Length: 384
Image (cartoon, rainbow, N blue to C red):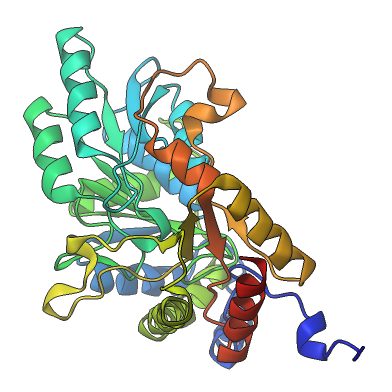
């Protein structure tokens, strides 16, 4: 038997950071300028560039979770309120609701994009309205780089006067029709965690069409300090500001965003070309609003996801990949199935439970080369 090659020994990761000389130069520039703090010219410039990208005012923050928390406060969520949240997502979306002292209520997915179901959302709002207790906000999550159906979600929420916070943590660089991800709701949120399309190591941002809201969030994120020589506080604030060093890294990454999205989309195309004809396995659907109309990106390719005809087959493929030193991961475990939220109300129809039971995320990072993807494909075919 031949000894394994270096490529076979190297673990292929799901979505590792894609950084290089541009990011190193940006960090050294910020370091040499002496702004080693959560204040400085790189933060100002990063916010301006995010604003140019999205068309909205941006606030750079320490995490996407911080952005969600402040977004909830910005739309008036108070302790004791209810907030509707996508069930099929990472825990941060629901956790932020608890930070505000509110209670999440979960809404299941639809099959067109795997995002929040407008039909179930409408049912839940109708029932809550009839009970005289409407939610204070709705948080749809744009899963795996694809926007939710905002053409339906926004009118439904507007009918009840409920604000929408678009959790676009996974969708920077994507678009809903001609609108950049994050700008379809009333407030948008991005994440720059290490596994996202672009990263600042940790970090996030809030975007708003109202500069006054952005300024209020910026104020709250810096411990709500008043403009006085001494430390003066009239509000409870938070230590949520992004550091100047990480903002410099973010600027370099944002400058490469189109390139990074294109690479992830190309990886998805390679998977589909090789595995699209496999019986009993399908790829995540691309919704009509995510096809890139009018030259816009549509889906950003963050993670390539597949579903199998049964859970046992998914588990077998995941085990085969792991044995070959290749990372993969089941799709999100729905929030209504999480022990910490066992007592939380949920309007579900089984969609997200089926996706969790049979779905798998494949290595998709833009740092991966074609040989890496071919190795994943070869191992998958061997495990099918």
